Length: 486
Image 1 (cartoon, one colour):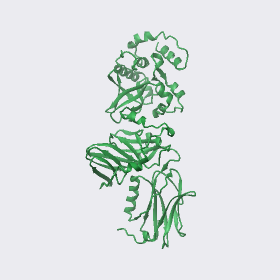
Image 2: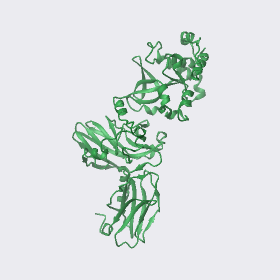
Image 3: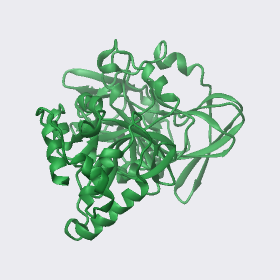
Image 4: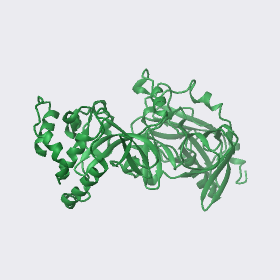
């Protein structure tokens, strides 16, 4: 009986003419007596409310629990910890017509589906059009579907989606172990606001920027200097402010508050998190920051990024944010993008940082840091560093520990493309520069400049092929009159 009904479902998914399923009525009468997980899965598929039917006649929670128990009895010893791909999904039709087989989605998606655990298929317009959205809530790392005013606990396909309490929507898939939630998305009052900010007149539906970009915005964020404390090699920055809009002078972090607040933050390393499977398609685009609010409430926090974007940029839709929570790393879409920051409204404060999808030609802003070392001949350590305060801090601490002196110089006024090969040159004839060229990455790259008989001004240039990206004149006084106490 069950197999016959599944055969009718598959025929309808294949586009065959509809025919009466004679066993359907009998199944609905006898399904309570069946002790097969497939029968319970079919019962859940047929009776899960979609909002267009009468109240559900099943105790869904009990049915799910029974399905899971039957799976353990019959299949757990065979599948063990193997990932169970969904067999069916809840669609928008009625009765058998609302049951969508997995292969229909795989065949209709624009991109080939290789791994159901990455959930990329649910970004496909055809898939969104044909599957039914179920609403629910996450709390205490558990997911509950809201059905007829009741809460039914369901399993999440990606457990790292359960990291914070929130209202959500998702697609409901079914395995022989029971229902599974896919493509969990936050449902908030900001959702419609975010959608309204998508400007269809711009390439790829880019997020809209404020008037005149972030330069005008910056004038509304007066800078505050943090108090710096160092404990066990960890540097912490503390700030406090009255109600208003502010920016940290060290990191570029911005915040908006309606009352007096105080908080502290520290930089974290990206290295461990970049090895996480959820981050494999991304690279850092700003510092990873651990923020702790000690008094008051922050209404908005703006995390800095170093990607060069403007009104016509095609990269603004490629951002994501990493949240570091106790159980896992979580990657989510960003709410608002400006030319220098990612804005979060009513933020929570797990450690978080801005990332961008790995792709060719992404333009980043860089700084050039020049240090005079205390070696016998004039030796300059030249660093090309993304505009990331955490990376700059690493260089500064390394050079300070060796007694080197920073030579002030202008920053490049042009962005540079990630992966681009750059070389450092000079008009000083006897200079030795090592290495001859470096590839730009999201990390500091280093050149050493050695001049044995320095006694005059000279010029340094950073070049990519024939293009000059940055130039700076080093004056004689810059390297002859400085001391470590300067």
